[in-house]
Image 1 (cartoon, helix red, strand yellow):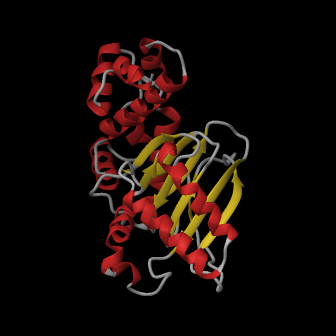
Image 2 (image 1 turned 45 degrees about the vertical axis):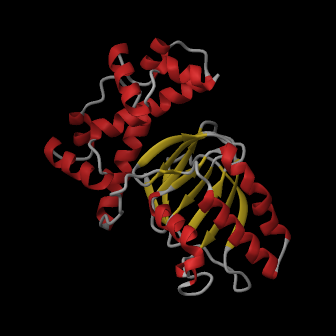
Image 3 (image 1 turned 30 degrees about the vertical axis):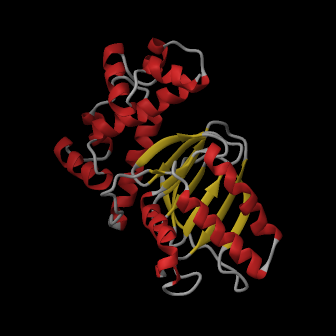
Length: 283
């Protein structure tokens, strides 16, 4: 998996950049992106997996994300057709040095602080932001600026936003480490359904001894490999429980577990419900 360092050009006549475009899976594999700007991104009609910081989670159409500066992120769609993406990019000082440090902006300042870990807004919550986002393209000047500030304020006041990465996550990896971290991401997301995936396998793939790999993984993901793998597998199981009629045993097998008792134990530990109770909550 490659790492792309991006630079978004914000036009002189604007304080932030709003862009709509189409994005598809890269046939050569996922690309991790990083940039100095904050990013608000919406994928209105897409489903897939989103990599932000040290998390891998499924997303559904309409979900919205806020990503802070230099936070690595990537997306993998469930289908290979192009999908519409809307992004907003801005710098912390886009509205003037110290603007977000004003006491009236405390809630927005807290939001931007948490964005350094990545924040997700589920589609049901994010839909309330759509009129403001559309307005950003329809108005100019002062009204455009006010719409942008209202959007940030509404996001900061939303109670159901979810901070994604662990609180200790701060990406300070040396450039030479990015390639290895990205290889590990790709290995996990492409092989988590294999029931015989092991620490020896992935440490060998990363050209490290198991002990060295464990230290490396904990440093960059702030959790051990087994816990991270289980979180990815259970995230996939949640998606299958939501979107298919497969029974729990079939879902456990399709998520990389060969023992239903182990699957049930991990599911309840991570989600807080048994798989059956989780599906019932969806009804």
